[in-house]
Length: 66
Image 1: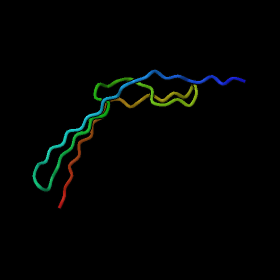
Image 2: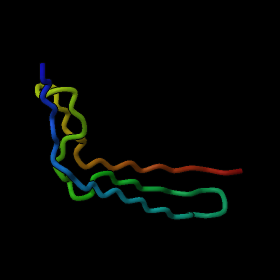
Image 3: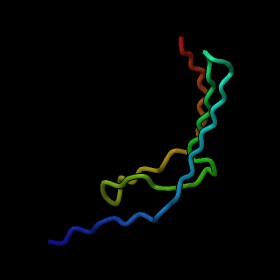
């Protein structure tokens, strides 16, 4: 018995991060995942359960240090 495998196409996903120190106690950070909004397939468990990758996403955070 032969089990067929699934071959997904290769992809390149670009992520980026920007940091800005507001003062000695505060820092702001912007993270962008999948900057170019590339369509890709992240995982496959078989030929009918293929999971697409996440679209572009951004996260802004403010952190503090005392």
